[in-house]
Amino acid sequence: MTLRFCFIFLLLVCLSSCSSLNRLAKAGPAKPSPFLAHADELQKTQADHDPFLRVWKNPSEETWRKAGTKKKLYIAPVSTEHLRRMNRPLSIVEVREKSRQKAAVELGEYARAQFTEAFRKSKKPLYEIVAAPEKEALHLELAIVELNPNAISAGITRRAINLLAVPGAEAVVGRPLKGNIAIEGRIWDPEQKESLYEFADAEHNRSALILSVHDYNPYSAARKIIREWAAQFEQVTRTPPGGRVKDSPAFTLWLW
Image 1 (tube, one colour):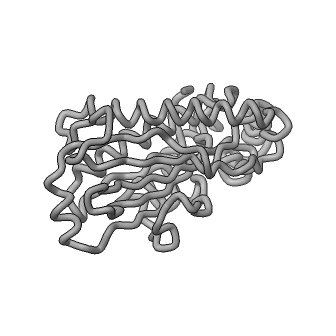
Image 2 (tube, rainbow, N blue to C red):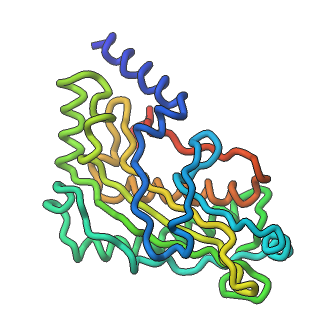
């Protein structure tokens, strides 16, 4: 048992340290929704350079120069207009659609609060957050486009896979058993009527060394993912072109 534990530990550490394998074990990108004006132009990123799976940046230097004079950011209410139906079988079995819709709205409110908090807690934020749209403020617009609540039965099954099969096997074969959430966002300059930066990302329940409390709660993993997105986005805004903001790991050594 001790050898098994050590093997799993070393496996997760090795996988977490390798950016290509780390992203391979993570959720794949969601299909872009009409929420983003440049959805078809989103480009795949590298995990050790960018935290988001797909990104588009306005190619106009003049547009960026004008937008660069603005140091305020308004975070709009998060949209759930493009939220797709559940596609994980056990999520469909365990969670009613009406309940999920309500949870999606609550997660949207949570996301808005967390993105706001990320800037307010930052030591060197690029933007000051304002509570209402202003002439000299850029807009951050977000949308939750996918949400499959974590099914408790799926969490139990994933643990069983690791106990009965090869250690770490659930990270590879357990994708359909993981709850997931996908987000899209853009920075909009209302004065120029131009989109500056658009991104899309998706995450699912993180594979754990032993177990994770998030595998036994429908939405706690989604809330943790949202907090990470908020911190990553804030860091992206103050990172110079060519700088790096790493993706979050696909594995965790912690219980939460």
